[in-house]
Image 1 (cartoon, rainbow, N blue to C red):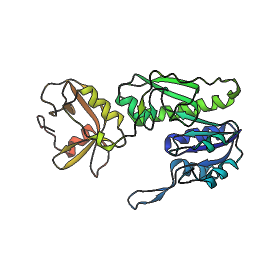
Image 2: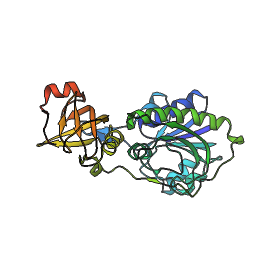
Image 3: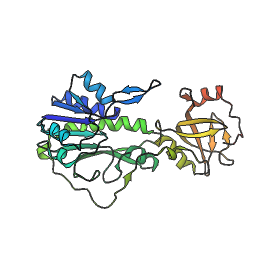
Length: 301
């Protein structure tokens, strides 16, 4: 098929690779414009943009698709279908209608649960036992379109957003290949009205740990916000990111430092911190962190 691919982050790259490997003709890749990044704050192309160039594919990075010129340029590609995964721009109706077979979105949740921008983060933070991937026909509403295929997977007890993103990315790449191969035989299934939830974009204000909260909630917050923006706590004037954790036992007031190798008391139970990062330093496991930073037993965070 003649395919327009639309994606931006690393999560989208395996899908692009899978479409190319399956023999589809990628007539154009759309991605977010380069953004300032790194210490020098120089414009850096997105992971999808970089991969498309390596595959010698044409790339477009419009700031918006709302202008007549942008919509005419999109329609002029005469694509059979557009495949969209974590692109980051709203697609106007004129764009949705342009490909002969419409636009398919790869969404990382079991719709209608977790429509919106951050479904993987929200699934972990909410303590969901399962999540998955849906191949959805796009329409004007926010992730409201009918579903062609879905596949579920359990969320492991210590899984972080980064780890789950990788698994769902690979799953989505496999599922879109199946969907395109069987497109004529897949009846669209409307999403039910019951069970709709919205995965709001992550706000950095959500990242500060409140040790008064139950350990289960703190653990989900740490894993759900890892690696970005990273849950954090303060030790004096130093911010320390907490990037991996698991539930543990302990007694004491909330915020009390225990060891073996590193546990922190919460409002109910404790969490064992597995990976940490001091401001300006690299990520360390708990043992290495304690070699370079004093968190004595009994210290209050």
